[in-house]
Image (cartoon, rainbow, N blue to C red; front, side, top):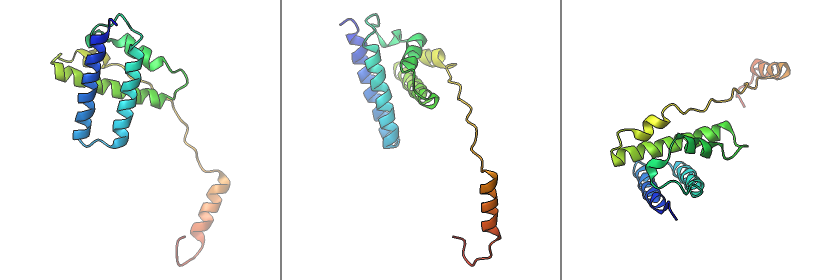
Length: 140
C-alpha cells in the first residue's frame, strides 16, 4: 500500500486530536461526532493511492469527501466541514506548518438553506389569546 505512511500519520494525529478534545472536556456527543467524521474521512482516503503524506490532502479531496453523500442535509455537511477544519488546524499546530491547511481551507463554507419559520395559524392565535383572557388562579 503506497499510502501506508499517510494512514499511519492520520491515525496518530486523529488519536492526539481526540485526546485533546477529551482533555478539554468536550461533550461525549461532540467526541463521537468528531470520531465518526474522521473515521469516515479515513475510509474515504483509502481509495487515494496517490496520497503519500498527510500534506498531500488538499481542498479538492476535502470537497470530494463532503460531496460523497448526495442526500445529506446541509447542516450535516456544514458540521463535517467544521470538524475537518478543526482537525487540519490541529495538524498545522502540531507540525508547525504555519497554517498550511488553515489557509487552504479557510474560505470553504457551506451556504445554509433558508428555512421558513412555522407561524401560528389564525385559529391557533385566537385559541392562545382566549387562554390568556380566562381569569384563572393558576396558569396551566
